[in-house]
Image (cartoon, rainbow, N blue to C red; front, side):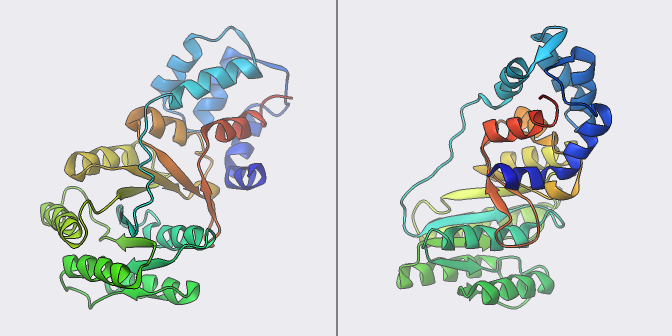
Length: 288
């Protein structure tokens, strides 16, 4: 796990090394502040984290300060429901389709069956891309033509999963911006239809956030949460940015479950998020 995390935060580690080239037993408060800011932790959060720390900071003190960011109540909404139905939400460019493939692969590794629903009927390219992933992973997919009603895809996907006794349903949605009212209403309709197809569905509504976007992704998350209620977050693209500290900002601002982080383009490049391992990966670059 740590090796995967080190790969994921490689560019963040390089940025930390520029600020603090030598690992030490202790760092000053000013050094620690510079490191956190360089890793793209929100300034107000950095100041708050530093409040309880002495002028000379040891690793355990740094760890105890950073872990407080994740000490909020988070409902991960795990269940044994079959099918377990997830709806994947997020704006274009966040890595939504690739993340769906990674999530499907993750379930396959647990010997669970999966079906995909191509609910992004807004773009033909989205349907084609998801179909390619389904073929590559050898899993079924329910799709329709561009412009057709995505709620029909939702209903048909869930009905197919129930008929075939499939474990996991993963439904794509259009890469909508929260300012587009018509797409907002469409998303609400998809959720209503999911519940008609299977009482209580979807079990989880997961938001895909681009880890390179900082406060912009936080604003997106708030808007989607107000609109439909978000049950968990997957953060993508952290392998290609020095902004690994943005996870601290996202957790602090949103106080939602962070389920996974994306670390690359391949199906296996999805890591279950563990706050203590994440923090230790960062501190490994600072302390001896």
